[in-house]
Image 1: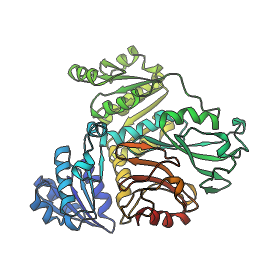
Image 2: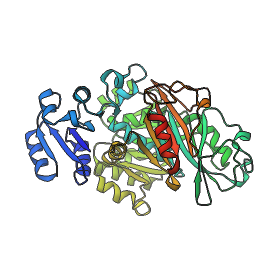
Image 3: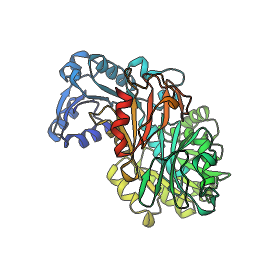
Image 4: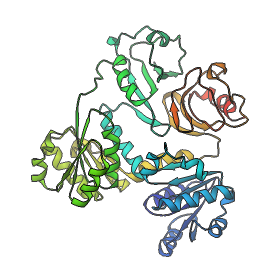
Length: 451
């Protein structure tokens, strides 16, 4: 693939390092001369020192022939402009890094359509999503988000005492916002039909709106009981901590507190948050942690800009009795070491922004007309693709379409509305569709969607 990256800071450099050793034609645009020189010496790529918002530099980087253009600077305005220009100049796929606020505003204004950018992401939001998975699912059930976070995937085992064993999907009458997309049984995986019965021990993959899923899960496993209240303490109120708090406070049963040493920042946070308590205090102080009764928290998360402080406060919180401790660690290698030593350190997981971003963006590193968002058991994949204008199923209801056996549509994003689609939903050109496909159904399904 021909790949162009503009911006070689923490995020861009990490991704460039991952790509430079692969069979790609990689070009990096970096405005700082010293950094550009270092990259040129260290990476197997073509490095240009220049401004990614100028047509001259973009033309020199040959963006017209780019399969993928990524704008990864720390300035969202620069990224929006450069990615928009690259698209206009002929880049096939364009991606721009933005602030989390831009993604929150997407229901008010469609930045992607306006700037003709294929994908927008926020480092802070992707990191918060990774951390939130550990909080919302402490039993480590598989959980992923799709359709800009509005649709969720959850896996759970079917308990013998659930009352659903021997009944078909049609008989159990799930809410229309929930879909059983995959059943794993006896080492095999299959996309189920409505008349297929469930059996004890099945591993069931469900898609749905997050709040509805939380209500449905106990039907499959009565042992999954929603907690009436989860106490969460976040150390550090900078952009990472703030985005996580806003994500968590939207859930009624999460009681969130932020500990932040800067009074000015506390005042800003108080104005931003709806249901989060802001504490002006030093989270690195053991005495302060005791005074705030951190030991009674179900989760303690170190989210400051200092990795060392995040790790040390987690260790102190764990010693005081906090249930589970999570740490934001920018160094990917440090995060791996911490996560692999949970029993020894007492830190449940360490999350690296670099790794979270790379994991999200690597799905775009393909010349195929679709993106493999996730791989499940038995070679089953979740695909994301855009419905082509010449697709034979355009403007048809889902009930009117003959779907390839082993495939199923699980989420549909039309403009700003995300749904788990039903039989009466109509596919429109430009819609983003998410589907579960077996290896045998993959190619027929893609042909159906793209041409």
